[in-house]
Image (cartoon, rainbow, N blue to C red):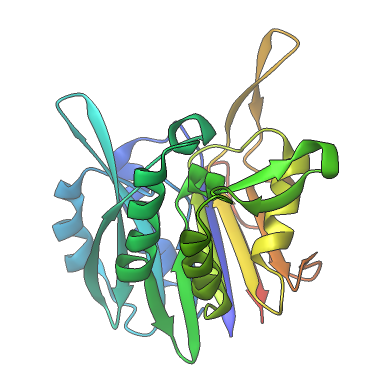
Length: 254
């Protein structure tokens, strides 16, 4: 099975994003294509995308950002057999502050995973965690950042979450901009990919603050895309040397 990850430059205009999605999908032979967060800006572009699709074999996961009354809604869509399907789900929380101690949101999130975030690619079951929703896992800092399900006081929710990941072959984590504290993120990637699972994350580039100064993260940076299997990084992948200043592309064979 061939899995293709595609990261976009974070400040790229909407029309160029749409054009690149069309080109990259139509020229791909991968079984599964996963775009970073903010793949397409505005749901108005979806009808145009549908008209231009020629690839009838790849399954494609992408995110559409729609701004309503100043608020961003980050919806998930997939393409199967050349048809665009709305998963009718969007990101529920962005960081640990939003989800911490919020059991009601945690329960809603588990339900979202169970009912709207899973799909099949061939014989592989896939599940989507959007960007900072990986904060459903927390790290115990004084135990070498050991990762655990956030709501330890709710064994019913933990049981449902563990059942979900146990029944999933591939966990996909599209991201908007690279996350900080990669030590903690690494432990989460190991956790999510344990027991023979695969985990893939794919992010735009962006800016990061260091010692009071902001700097750009290169579109070629290794921190934009991660592949893990059975708790360990996947070292072998095909890196696209023809990728331009607007995107990074990697292909993994699993």
